[in-house]
Length: 344
Image 1 (cartoon, rainbow, N blue to C red):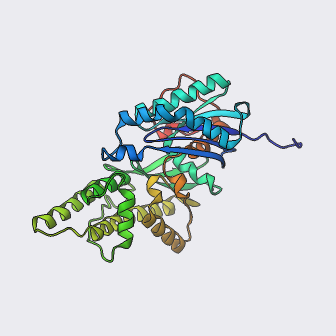
Image 2 (spheres, rainbow, N blue to C red):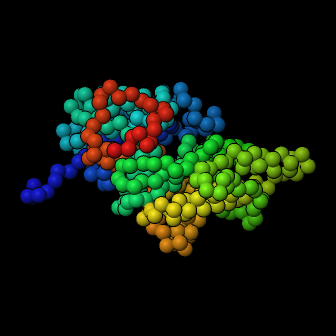
Image 3 (spheres, helix red, strand yellow):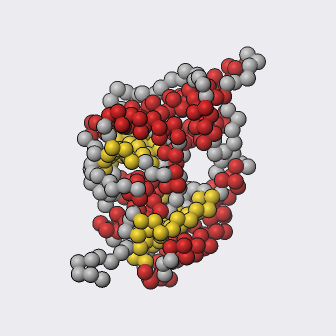
């Protein structure tokens, strides 16, 4: 090693917060050496959504194989690892436990530190896998369970300035998709149909108080159900394409406007988009167009790093590792884990 050079930090990361069993090896918090994902979508589709007990059992069935595959794909041996990272929360408690137990077992067997990692911090730091982050920055988190505006004054410091008061945006997409007759997961179906539609049903926008950065989507979901039911009562077939476009336009307008306002009010240098709904084509296109118009630097990870994956957990864990070191081995899975308390 040359004088002044630093040793590379390899982190094995495990993510089992919901219905993906994912393991990755990440170098220095930004270089993905492997990122293996075993999805349970086909299993849960029959139930119309994720069944927690089934998800946990599926994680148990494949976790060891996915760990072995991720290590082999990365070409890394256990002695080269700096630490083992795992999603500590939030998520489904049974699913989280599978990953936590696996990570603790590896940490003990291989003599490596453990890093309990926040799932949403992972989504946020997925952006570091594609670009250098500049602070202060603003993050729009959009997923099945979370819709938040998170301000980061510096690396690893999180302050939530806005959040949903009811349904998360991904949850709203799935409920609307079900009302329109699409299978789980419904978000991609609504997005595709919305972008193909030639017209849109006019639906309400929930702006809330003038200075609020919070979100609300339950009323919009009810408005969609009302349009569908009124059509059926009249003996008509609902125009699902126009409804999908109207729904998506309402969601996207509110998300984009509040995110831009948050950037302006905080003096953020960048706007980051993350979470499963960040893969939504309509939202990505609208945010890119608006940020270009406003002169705001926008970072969006590719879809593989938007949905649940372990590379993002490795990226966030690296930040925790460089500031705070490891987590005690008596760490427990926490389905209600606070992002702000996880700050370094």
